[in-house]
Length: 68
Length: 495
Image 1 (cartoon, helix red, strand yellow):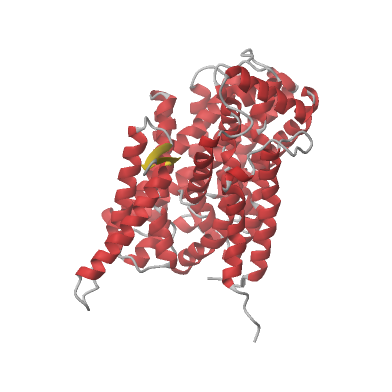
Image 2 (image 1 turned 45 degrees about the horizontal axis):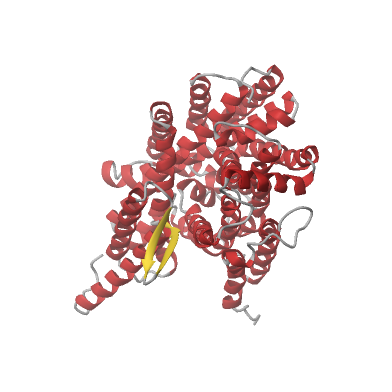
């Protein structure tokens, strides 16, 4: 019998981007800058690949052979 | 901005427009079923769209032409605050991943075409179904109208005066949507999305080098905001909560709209949706880069009378005519795809949740498709009339209210899928309170998306739709508890 991954951890993975992006004071600053982009901008853009990664990990943890 | 006609630009523009028109009509034969005469085929493309078609379709109808025009325009006008679209279109996908596969399964299992179908199947109570369906239709109408605003902006920039080009484009769209159904926008979305990617990537790669690099672009925007005395590269502390709540509220509302749900229901499997939750953020990257065009507008010292002209003007100043035509065609076609899917989504709602229960209960699949086709025409003509006859402000205000309204359908859909313990009447009460309070607050504030609530000594300013959603869910909980306490044991059969 294969052990099912804990769904609470899967849910937590999906909630991380909300924490990272909705706590606005965390990233409302100019420095450090990268390639001329103030922190405010590259921080939020960085959450795109991070969210993709977290969602992909969640994807690996759920069953997806369901037809309906 | 230039208003004389650039024939290179116009030629390329008309060429691409003609191409997608042919594709729109040909789409009826694409993956041809035995018959298009059912809602499953006309309205959902046969529910067989795999990962890539769904990616192009949902990307094509979620990131609309109006987005391409309005997001940079807002960033041009107010700076950092306009970027809330970025967190919004990131956090929407974990939500899609968690919720939409369950909605798809419920719909596929029982042949449902709309979200209110799914809710009705759970609760068997018509008023709740009708409330959700009606909300979907009235929230979608102004959204279609805004696509026309986006299209009109590029027509104006091309030097095409008057309303005739808009009417012609829309009539063509209406006719091929009528004949091909969802297959038309799904096929055209391939062309539209690839064109938008090329236009935006060229813009964000080429424009900064012409303007002295991204550092110079941000610096120019910064000094423009300081000279103006409003806006800025960072948020003011008073904007923190509005920024976060607008992002969250918009993300929760985004996949309650009929057009985004149509893309979900048309998917081939629940797994198609999960994969898309991972792949669709590529469009968000595009949107984030696109938003920076607002700052490039400052660096290029554009002088526009209407903020919506920033994107077209920037292309006209910095690119040769043929590429301007290409980019404008991308935006105009970018209006056609969502407008088509929105009218199909609204038509599906009208057919399934109004015509079938109230007009003709024994309507055949073939009859359903006929009703939906006519409804899609009516919806599009309505949107066109709104734009031609009423001030643009009216459509913008309705669109803002539409966002507040559609968010109020979230509890019914989520509860039906995951926690069916509230009574249908409790969900209906919640919807009524959320819809009423949201409308009242937004209008009392002068049709603004933010409302300030005083809690003790402090005041919190947040997205009105989210305040209304709190009242909505609170009502659902209170009414459910009240019903359970008041009803004698063993008589829990009432709705």
